[in-house]
Image (cartoon, rainbow over all chains, first blue to last red; front, side, top):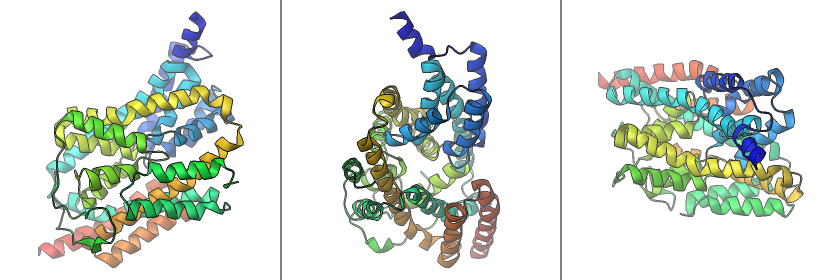
Length: 190
Length: 210
């Protein structure tokens, strides 16, 4: 019982406090580099956690990312799964707070700065200028998500279903998601 | 909330969901309502929360216009950190200050964090099952379609863009190709195309004012 609790709190390998601090600081640093989302720093996280520190295997790292994407909620939670696999709940606290603290502070400051200066030319130019890039980035994201599935016949059909539901009905996206999971579980996406 | 730059045109009203022209905007009653709204939308967000956020915040609750949603997302994308986390903070902050920002963030993260940790604890046992990996592929295709629909819904906002529609559409396609096809780093796009777009927008806005 005692060892189970210890496993939950600190993970399988009992990282030292110095190691936990290093984990926290490294994720804080990556937080400020994560333009385009936390996932863009995954290669660097991999290099450090798997390669340099050897806290996770290659396979553990990849499944941590895939797992978070299959669960509901923001994809950034893959850093929590990495923290969990490295050092239990203490690892979750280190990676998640490290990832979130710097970027959230910056986002709040930037948002307030912009709100107070919304009539300045540079703020208005940002709004108008960046809007097309934002939409283009979403198109690219859809492409990047669909690309590994391009050989499955079900892919265009499921994508069309999702677009139809979102554009022409009021249903929650949970419904097409459930259809996608069912179709895949029945083996029609192999 | 900031009013949209120019009153958006009625945007064709092509789809069944309510129009996005900013008429009938509402505000959340309390930080508690913000928490519940982000809690509910996070739990519907498999493979990405953005499409649900657009449906809930713009179309159902009408806390933001489509144009405000694009603006908030633009800032969320340029800043480091997860877009949806940045958006939750900014939206919460605009309504109820720091308290609202923290309520939205907590609503977004609390329940999904618990779920993903339970998944992580159970995963080893079921990972190799073909039905599980098949279901993940099916969900991946739907996630791609959901993101595509989010982009399609934002298209009409380009009609009222200060740069004009042709320039806006060209910039959008250039970004999609550069990131999706050539896989260039986002930083280059923001610094290169983004700077160019801001310069064009500033020039057009100055002309309009003159």
